[in-house]
Amino acid sequence: MKLSKTAWNNVIIFSVMIIILIINISNNRLFPEPDTNDELILPEHSVVLTLSMAFPNNTSIVFDRIARAWKTTNQGVLVDLTNQQIDQMMLAWQQGSGLVQAAEIIIEGQESVEVSIGIAGIEKEQLFTLYTLADQLLVYNQQNKIWLALPATMKHQLIPLL
Image 1 (spheres, helix red, strand yellow):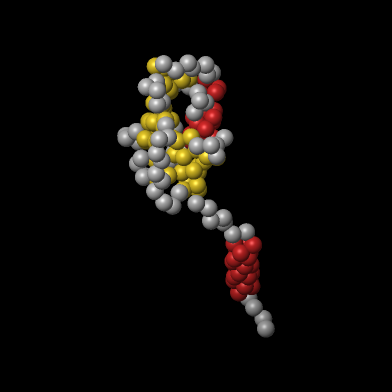
Image 2: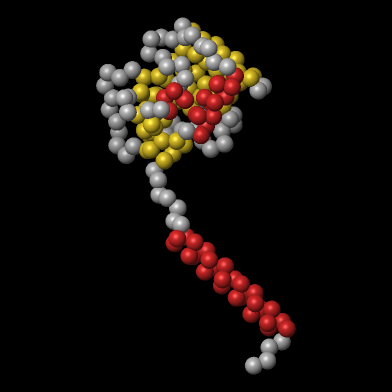
């Protein structure tokens, strides 16, 4: 069988396409994407402009972004954080994720920390309620009405004042 140069080019093109399809199919079967139920605390690639925390003993603290630095306004809370530590706290809020809880959680008699976060490009502040338990940190996202369970170690990253 004799093929022209154009026909051979078509054969080569279709052969390469078939090989690429085979590699993609086998790659998806060998390395399936994990089906986790994790969700980020804040929307992806969000920039925090303000973060305010209200503690149960009527004390509060507000972090405001001013250019590349942070301005801290506190009421009854001793704040001894550097700009680098505040940046690390904001990074923990931006990249933190937790396991979505399927059922509504009822917490009685547990003190909470109320957090409101102003994000660039989003008009409405994001509101969260944090409950620190012995083995985990529960975060209630009031906009999405979902509960997230985070490891207890995240408490000191999200709220370094406790």
